[in-house]
Structures are given as C-alpha cells and as structure tokens.
Length: 402
Image (cartoon, rainbow, N blue to C red; front, top):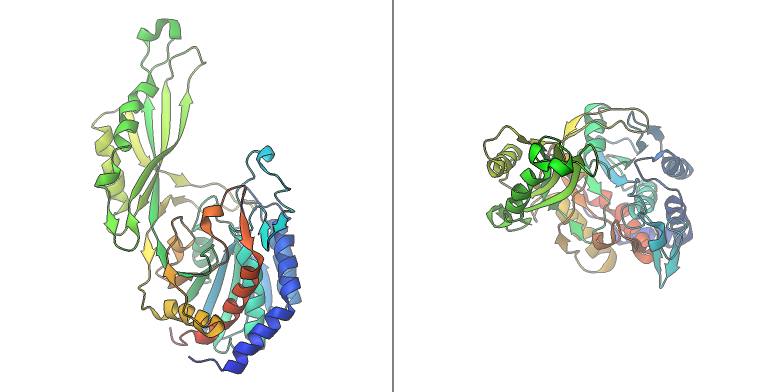
C-alpha cells in the first residue's frame, strides 16, 4: 500500500506536538517498579493512557497482562511490549535512582528504559494516531503489555490459547537500535542432576560427592560449542552452564545432590529432543546423573498457571517478506532511507509468535539490547519519539489480505 505525503507530514506534526506527553509517559512507566512479573501497577498506567487516547476497549487477561484494542477491521495487528523488568541487582551499583532515572545528553537512564518500557509510549500513541489519520482502515490494532522476563513467549501463548486472540501480524518492541529485526536464535533450558551419598567431611570416604560427579560433565559441556549448529543469518549455537545448586547436610558434609542449569541457544536444524540427547551422551549411561528439559509452572501474580516446557524455537522471516519490507519502507518514507534489517542476540516473545504459532513477526524499538539488564539501562528520548512515527505509519503499509 502507499501512503500520501500529506499523511506522513501529519504524522510528524502530531507526534511533534505530543513529544512532551510521550516522554512524560515513558518516565512514569519506568518510575513504577515491575520486576518479578508484578506488572499490575504499571499496566494500570498504560491502561489510563489508552483510555485517554480513545482506545475502543482495554482489558486484563487471565495471566494479568493488559490488552488494548483500537479499530475494528478484519486484519489483526498486535504491538507487543513487555512491561515487566528484571530487578535492580545491588542498589549500591546505581549512581541514580533506578526507577526515577536521570536524563543526560538526551538519553533517559532507568530500569526498563531499554528493556522494554521504551516501546510502550510509541506503540500506544502510534496506534491512536494511526486510527485518527485513517491508517487503521481494515485493521484492528492491539497493544499487548505483558510479562516476559521470567519466561519469554508464555504471555502470547496464553493470549492465543486461553483468551482466543490470535493476531495476523505482530510487532515486537524489544530494542532494535531503530532497525527492523526479523528473527533470533531459540533456546532450550535444561538441568543435570547428580545424586550421591552424604557423609561427614571428616569421613568423606564413606560418602559419594555429588559435586565431583558433575565436574567432568561441566568440563565436557564447556568444550561443546564447536560441535553445535550454525546458520548464515542466526549464527552459531551456544551453550552455557548458568547456575549450580547443592544439597548437603552442612558445609562440613559430603553433598548428596548437585544440580546444574544449562542455557542452550539453538539455531535452525537443532531440535529440542536432539539437544537433550546430546547432553545425555555427555553424561553417559549412568543411573546417578539425569539430564532433563525444565518445566515452567510458576503462577503469575493473578495465580494463573500455564505449564510449559522451557523450549523456545529459533525463528526468522526472509528479508523479502512483505511485513519486513513494510517496516523497511516506513523508515524510507519517514526519514529518507530504508531501514537496515537485523536480528537480536537475546530472546523475545517471537519464540512463540513466529517460532511456535507461525505468525509473521518483526521487531522494532528504540534502544540497544547491550544495555538490557545493566545499570546503564537506557534509551535515547529522540528515538522514543521517532519510533512513535514509525508505529503510526506502519499499519498504512501492511498487506490487507491474510
């Protein structure tokens, strides 16, 4: 589809006039702590803004995510922005209040500014503006403010399977440096559990040390990466032992149980069961060590439980995909040159949207993922405003057929 220059000029004019409101909204979102998936308060702030801007309907799903609807066309477009964050870690590492943040050289520093509250203002204001300018004709637009940090993909999975809302196309607002991202690696989260026998440390020969059982396993895992899969776009597979837990009667005893967790980043052609079997071969045929894929069954803050194996598929759209090219073209129409395309190094809700459900998805958001989860969590304020223009224009460039 084509969009007249007058409409593009109107987008720029309206967004410029709303700049202060957009930035204030961003700061107020970040000022509300939302770690540990506790998103009710920040979701209520997003709810208020959607109602102020004329969304047709705003509601909470069973998990406790906030959903806004605007427009009533047959094509369903969903803007996905997770509004939970990681915690702040050690408070003494922050030189400013992590939630109130600070502004320096046009950059806003605060927990969640980059990952991922920075996309919410542009998405909400962009959808409202798209409707005002007629760019949502034939489209129902949704904003989905969700929890993602504990288990990426679970919120959209439940939205589709439990709530019955299946979009035709998704834009993920994770930071993309204002480029159009079209995929990322998947991952499988596993554990390896070793069982031994407790004994007093003074008589350790009477015990069987579970930690010692895992040392050769950990060493072997550390040498696996050359054997892993590779893809020209997504890159090489990765494997990391990320945590270790031990059960022991005391620090003066031989531990009877040791557990390691493994983060295995997968690319195309690496199937979850084959990934697990690879680890089982490392362990060997023994009854005292067991490898398995983790299960996520933690209740949300509403008490909602949606059990899932911690399997997150790799996904990517082709460069010439119509949705990818709509995102690229939006940059050309707004700022004079087509946007570059790329991929994330980390994982997003795209593992469900495109990886499991097969729903075409792209990423676009302000900020750079290298700042995610750090004390330098940040987003350029100009990019938050510019992203609003892109979110407003994109619906006018999308295919109108499913």
